[in-house]
Amino acid sequence: MNHLRTAIVHEWLVNYAGSERVVESFTNLWQAAEVFCLVDFLNDEQRKIILKNKIAHTSFIQKLPFSSKDHRNYLPLFPKAIERFDLSDFNLIISSSHAVAKGIRKNIEQLHICYCHSPMRYAWDQSEHYMNGLKGSIAKLFISYLKKWDLKSAEGVDYFIANSNHIAGKIKKIYGRDSTVIYPPVDVDKFSIGTSKENFYITASRLVPYKRIDMIAEAFSKMPDKKLIIIGSGPEEKKIKSVSLKNIEILPHQDQSSIKQFMQKARAFVFAADEDFGIVVVEAMACGTPVIAWNGGGTKESVINGKTGILFPKQNIDSIVNSVTEFEKIENNLDSQIIRNHSEKFSRTNFEKSICEFVTEKTALHFHNV
Image 1 (cartoon, one colour):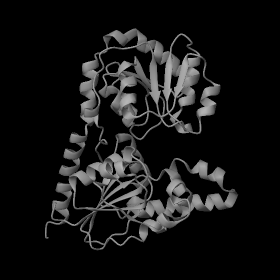
Image 2 (cartoon, helix red, strand yellow):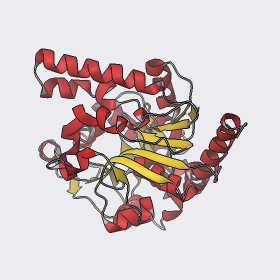
Image 3 (tube, one colour):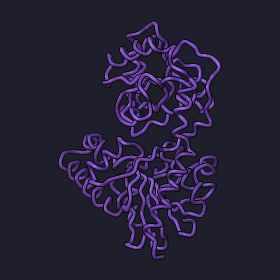
Image 4 (cartoon, helix red, strand yellow):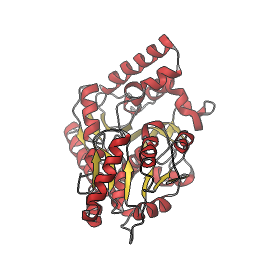
């Protein structure tokens, strides 16, 4: 596997979030690989972790005005930008894709394995946002184009890996393709069980609409005797403050060390988003802290109801309130060490082992005559 000239393709490198952790593992495994992305604006610390101090090959979008902060505004150009990369000199292409990375062009001799975080969200899950941002027929034509391009680009993938059964279902429904599930890497070794609990609940997230932090705040406003700490920043902050009573404390984004301490001390971590997987949920469990989460998306695969937390059935306020009541009835029966042990299933070590085995098997099949 290591003798193959390898290219790693990702959408954009501008921060260190869930999908970038996957790229980090790819560069751990394929140290000689070259990385391709639409834009690369990593700071020095992020570059050291994700790219091992390398500079990625970037598209023409890198040089467009305001691309460092507003690269998503160039969405209509993404398909053409990714298709312009010439990867003809590489044997193995590994893409980390939630939008267009899987649309890289390849020839029949090359092997393309796609780690799919999600089918293109802009075409399938978030199209309404772009329909609102554009006008009438223009918006419909644009979304229609994205969907057609996305479906066509999936044909160039030899093997799909899904980051959860939830996403595997979407890959099957949208692309008509089977996939192998390998859960994304969580750095559980950077978290540990705390020595004592305090009387508060916690949630941490970017304050954007789909995270549903406003719903959690409204639920706890109906439970004024229970303290909630919200950690995060974003455009929803004003709205969340407007629905929060005095029992809710909102803190700006914190570093990992601070979030770890809050997670260790909290009675439970509360999560209401429809996530592809939800790394932060596993990080909370790595602290031995139970999770109260919506029974949907990727979280229904990482949280064991009644053992590592509580899964509530509906994304609404009453469901959260009821789940907190249910949690407090069984809280003393939940074992922090069992919760911690469960989180280790999602470790980076396990991820890299599974990815390495998968790629080794598929390259052997594809290049058996090489």
